[in-house]
Structures are given as structure tokens and as C-alpha cells.
Length: 603
Image (cartoon, rainbow, N blue to C red):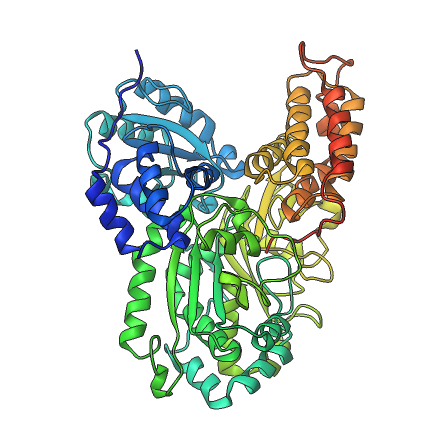
């Protein structure tokens, strides 16, 4: 018996109204699909065909976009769509057992829809709630934190009783900031408009010079000089200039932007407005990751309040001709959209495939116009620099890494949460402050970052030593570092955009090799082949995702080799699968694919 569809297809007239609200703009395709699915639960082909015809697009293009993002469904899914966070820290807290328990109670198989169409249960990547997991998403819009067996039992009962998620206990969706240590950005906040007034008093060029003298570097991971980026954008010819806030915080273990958007949104928006003054932009866009959909209403309220206060819109703070406003674009589940050119593609209603560069976004970005893309924390820093000056900021931290850095601390520690320190702080100091004991490893910067062993805890956070996008994941000696690396490998394989062969095939081969080791069928030859795959991918992938995918693999093999050796037996391949033949094919494809491709770092 085939599953019944849990939803009724949206009438053509209502779909037409939805399209009209977006002015029949092809660039709004991702938002149109998101809103359509919110209304009817999934995206039937007939609706996609109507969208294609109305927007002047091919059905293949619309289906290609819908199929790219993991939060879009082109087949019926349950009325209750439950997605457990599958980040390693959620697993350490027991998420796998809780998922199995829920599936048993509901009589549903993981990854499938129940026959009556009521519920489907699956996993997703990190939801940005590592400090209060295990966590899950309901219908891509509502979060449930701090899962326990008791809470799972209650949740199953509410689903069977068909209680709408918005009527579930409020405390289930409570998300706390958990700020454990505050410094500049998390401390006393300026009055809204105060930093902007200081920037206006200086003027655009002088404000740019303050950012440059501050030596501010991007806080999303790549560390590009913010002042230089703004200068290039400001000087680039174009019909319009744009300011984009990258709030697609998808790196597993990172949740600092969640806190900034929740409790420091004014500082973020004010930093965007200062950037607009400097580069000459009239339009800003905030790309909010789909997992943070629950923050959308709050952020829209902040923007509206600032408009009413004369801090957004036309003639800002009474300055004639200073016009700037911000629109929010909600993503649909794609880690690769954290790369700035992939993010711009998504803003334009396309698949989030990273662009070939040059040209760079500062010259040819959103809608082909000069665009500066900065991280949430970077814009927050700009607000404080505008208020107190570049010299003050450059006096904090180190010579090459000025100011402070916010860290998302999770894993095996007594006090997970948010910690802000000046650059140059020891790894060991952070471990002491968060209450970590018997620690064997710290993954800094998320899976694409670096894994540090005990002998390295004296190293310091900074672009000169240990750069980071903000994740700080702690693992004590009870943890199997092989399983940590395997979880990260599955993450990268799942999140590859599939554009280039080295990343698409290479990540899959890494996963298969690690899964083979996990089953006890591996040998030392498998470990050597993993080294080879790392070399192939690091030098030939289209963007930074593939180049960084083997970072945790390389670090854990080098520093925690016994964790791998425990899985080694005699050479024994899985029946029916010639992995060495596939590896040879991958090598040949790598040699042919993307000659001269640019390697970029995910911001």
C-alpha cells in the first residue's frame, strides 16, 4: 500500500498570488519555493511547472533548484517532518538512540514517511544548537532543544494526537544564549544609531580608513582584510552596490551568529549600514540559514523598528541621499552556501554552486554588481570600530589578529556556550574556563578547521597560529576520534554541491573507506588510500569545501593513529564492491577535471 499524500495541492489561483507577491521575479525562486512548501508541505511537479511558466524559466531549471536544497521536498513527506541534528556533539549526547526511540514509538522507518502520511523522521546537519542538544527541527521552522527520553515520549504522543507544533510546550523550544564570557562585542552595547552617527560625522572615506587602521579581518574563517574588501567594492564601477550579511552559519559546532542575531541584532544591522555608507550601497541583504528560520520574525521586527527610528530607509538620520534598507533571504539547507559566491547564487534564486573566480564579488557579485559579503560577527565588530575608532580596536589582540573572537564551545565540558576572548588566547585557557577535563582533542574551526592534541593546547587563537571560524569542539579521552572523523566525512559527502568530480567522488570514496574500517574490514592499505584521497582533493577541487574536507581525517590519522589501528584487520573488501577500481577512476577524473581551478576558503 503506497503512502497517502498528507497535503492538498495549493490551488493555481493561490499560487499565482504567491508569485505576484514576489513580482514574478526569477531571482526570488528560492523564496517562492520555500513559501510554497510552507503552505502545502511539499513541491509537486504541477506547481513547479506553473512556477516555471510564470517566471519564464524552464521546468528543468526550477526542478534543479528545488532538488539542490535539502529542505525542499519534491515527494510527499509527513505532516510532521522531524529532523534530528546529526552533528557529532549531538551524537555524543545520545541523539542516535533518541531517534531510534522516536521511530519505534511512531512506527516509522528513519528517512521514510509513515503509511498514513502523518510523520517522517530523518537527520540533518548541525542545527546550530550544539550547546543545548540533542536538538531537532520540526517542519524546518520550529526547534526542540535538550531532548531526553521523557521528552521524546511526550513528543511522540503529541504527534499521534495531532497536536500542532505551535501548541507544544513552550519550554521545548527555549533557546538560551549561554554567554559564559563577554568582552567587546558581547559587552555593553551602544545605543542604536550611535555608531552610525559617528560614521556619518567622519564621512565614507574617513570611516573606511578607520576600518583599515583597525586591521579588521573577516570573522567567518577566511580572514580577508575587511577594509581592503570594502575599498575594492567602493571603487568598482557599477549601476548599484550591495552589502550582504552572511548569516548562513553552517559549520558544525558553530553557533555564535545565532546568539548575535538573537540578542545583538542592532549591532549587526548597524554594521551593515556603516558598510553601506562606505561602499555606496542602497540595498542590503541578509542571508539567514534555513535552520534559523525561527529567528525570522524577530529580525524583521528589528529592521522595522530601525526604519521607524530613521536608522534604515530613506534619508537615514536626516542625511539627505543616504538611503539604505535590508531584505532577509532565508536559505533552505545547504552548507556550501556559506561560500560567498554560492551564497550570491542562492540569493539570485539559483542552485548554490560556487562561482569560478575571478571576477570576485567585490567586482561582480549580486546581480552582476559590486558586492561586499561579510560575516555576522564582522559587521558587529564594525559597529564598535565606528564608535571607538580603529586605533582602539588594533590595540586589542595581536599584531596580525586584532580585536576579539567569539567561540562556540561544545562537547565534553561542564559549561558549553559562548566565550569571547582577545585574539592570542591560549587553547588551554578556553578549556580551563569551560570546565573541560581529561581532554584528548579539540576541533577548532569546525570540521574544515584543525584538530589539536594535548601537546598543542599551548597554541593560541589567531591567524598567525590557529585560525578559526568560531567552533571549539571538545573531546575527552572516552571518545573515539576515528568516529569523530567519520562523522565529519559523512557531513562533507552529504554537503558537496556535486559540481566538481574530485569533491563529489572523492568525498564519497572517503566515506566508503571509513565505513569499511568501521565494519572491521579494513587494513593499513585503506589508511594509505585515505592519505592519497586527501592529496587528490586538496589540490583539485572547485572550492574550499572539497579542499578542506579531509582536514579532520588528516589530523586524526596523524595525531590519533591508534583510533584507526583498532579498526584494522587483514585486507578484506566488501563483496561486490571494488574500491580500488573506483579509486583509479577517481584519479583519472581528477586529472581531467577543472584544470587550473581556483581554491577558495569557505567564509
